[in-house]
Amino acid sequence: MDAKFNFYEIVQVKSTGRLKKFNGLKCIIRGRSYDDNAGWAYAIDVEGEKYGSCAFEYELEETGKFANPEDFKSVGTIRVQVQPDGSGKIIEDDY
Image (cartoon, rainbow, N blue to C red; front, side, top):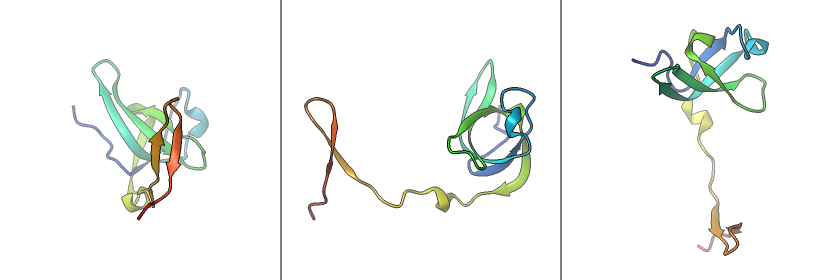
């Protein structure tokens, strides 16, 4: 079964369940997965919220708009070395 929503698509929450506090808010599709029993589930960034959430397809509706994927690309990287105790240490650029 094909997914109704695509990555970076802007959708609106319309839930009667746990996401009803977000009803009417826009969100951006950031990931998706399919389960034979539950159908499509989406990782979403909800407008004005610090943390993302997860929604089922029936809890979202189309807006016909998409966010610019370039707005979500990383602007830099860091190098980390794993220490013997399992912790990480940031390595300064050596070039």
